Length: 522
Image 1 (cartoon, rainbow, N blue to C red):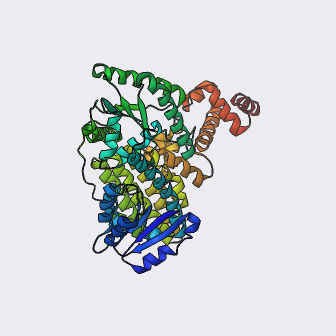
Image 2 (image 1 turned 30 degrees about the vertical axis):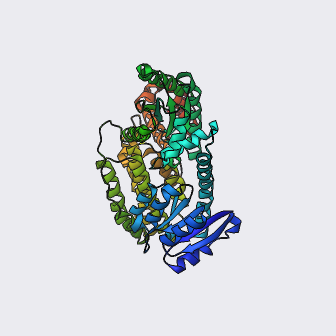
Image 3 (image 1 turned 90 degrees about the vertical axis):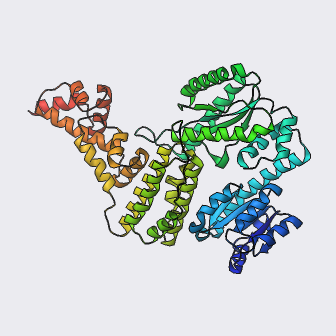
């Protein structure tokens, strides 16, 4: 059974959490409730704990100080932070000390708490396994992935952990490498789901790990931080510096060719320099983090800046509660604009999306609306986002959907985006029309437009476009004798076969039979 501590300076919160769920059913017991971090730390030093749920702002010792104090002495303890949107900037600081989860107080209910406890129990098991391996000096080969994953997660690299790696000769000449990749957007031909992306990730991982040993025989897979599905991380040993870059080039070529055949993804290989000794572990990790920033921003040179958006999240929440679509748009546009102008890392972007998610879900629940659709259509895809452009596109989609929802509630127009899309289609019906072009004109992402169009119009956009094109084709046929292939090309179809197939599907007859029928009527 997992030993749980609750830390908050408000007695009603302590009592509320203690009675919110059936703790024994979650395989947990409340082993102590404390009014500040100092009381909790004393209890941890005396009897230990598995999971600690703590508020951030408290007298004597606050939650952040408690987390910081335990991060080195008791790394096996898993922390859950309680916060408000106004304090969200402090959560980012807590994450630096490997806080596992946070809960916004306005979202604290039995279902949320049970879900979070389920996740942190798994993390508790993982951390205790790593801690026990380090303490006992285990030499199991299977432990390497856990040990190296810990290096990526913890801001302070544990000396005993580094010593274990060094004693085994793993730090004589080593490097971190990563494969970064982006997932395809939804299109006319394919609407991608979270499950599709997970399958692609597994296939891509399989491709890389079948090829890696042929180039670097000594390889350890590392679990990416925060369950990201847009990169693959590895620790490699390589003795000969003179051929290291050539080996990387060979690996990159092999993986790209295989990926083109299997997944269709285009993984980009990044690597640190070859390093030696435990003293360079932190620097090597920093080099890998820098490569991640370059891949996310899409350029080599950058200067990380503070984003300073902490005050926006509570304003966003209040704007949704007030059903003020204009104010919501202002908040999300400000966030997008800041992300566009200031250099930042993917982890910072994920933090911002997490804050937006908390604000939106909390506000929708407050006004009696289910946040389930936003979770499914938008926030569930965050782990698969790997570029700044896609973060900004996602925020634009959230903005459009949220404002449309609020305008619908208040009686405002909710289909401006679809109207813009139809305007573009009607004006370009004689040309080849792509989803990307229509989405660009409507100022939303292709995936969002595709889903929204079908929801509003009752049919897919490609069906709508084809229906208009067939009507235009019939107009041309009615004017006189024209070759069918000429009509197809004039309407933007790449070949007459596809045009004929579409025409028959909509009218029930082939273009040739339709023209013959018109001639007979004449």
